[in-house]
Length: 500
Ligand SMILES: [Zn+2]
Image (tube, rainbow, N blue to C red; front, side):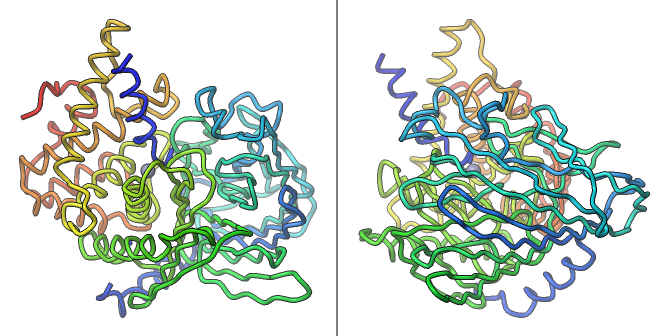
């Protein structure tokens, strides 16, 4: 029983996010100006009517960046995963209690109207779980061609602590609007909203978002914000170039503290009664500085770290990350903040299919967190202890599962829905990731490891990377074929035996 309890506690600590300046001036704006050309753009105008009701109008100027002629576009309707009759739920029996502290609640997204190039179009809901909007163009869209789609929609928010929901004066708006599916191998990727991991996959696009909301709320969001207040209503206008997704968080009990580093404004939004606002802002700033210096420049003008009621440890979105208000300790808060900020590099700027290759961003974010504490010793968190704890808990997990089931899956490279449960996913993707990268550090040295990550970042920023792009970067940077090393860990053939 002790072992199980220990595993449970470790797992709770590890299930983080199912879920970053000095030389920044100069290149930053040019970088974004260059990559934001000819991208798909989203213009969304939304109003918060109440904590559980939002109406919105979205105009997408979709650019066909595939090499195929398209006659339709599929869009994810993620909020529909929260509806009562959804078959694939974004939570499990294990996470239900922390997701719905006030009891089970449902949400939905209703598509009110669809227009293609200003002409009314059919509202065709498809997908494995009626979670995809298929927009038929009525014409052929050639590669590099552009088409205008207008979608009017309304949102019902569940009373919950998930990425999309409201709870005790906080409104989490992650994965809340129709977003284009990626097109691969002749079809759109319509992966549903699985409960395990962050099952998201999207390309960078340009966003202009306007949100009208009751003025008692504070707002943090992706992008640069300007706001005006009139008669108890605030209207915020945000602009974000070349970002992979768009998220917001509102809170009626929060304060925002900010610091500028170079051209970047770093915000930390925490509760009014908190005594650690500046402490958490400080570590956020340090994380951005360290990762910028170590992996490559943070290209955007803002980053907000938002404390909010949240089902997991935290969640990453471009320019904004959520951290849970119910973490066990100050050290856990620090680790989650740094982990989520590391995702700005791994997932947000260098993108990947988080549903199919979760290890690629999660293992990197988790190990980058360990590297941060190794090189920023003032926070009192030991790199050696992080690695030793990962190793001992991994070995314990493997022992226990083998004893129970007679076998244990040790693959890191499964799709999120192929893991049997959140435990298996967490141990293979987060914990084993730390062990793998620490072993690589011992094999090639820390400088070469960091050169590999720099190369991976530089080559793949603003793009969608995969295992091959990762392998290629390390081969180039380390002058050594490390495919066998990585394959052994990813496929589960490398046996991790004992503490050495
Ligand atoms: Zn993560």
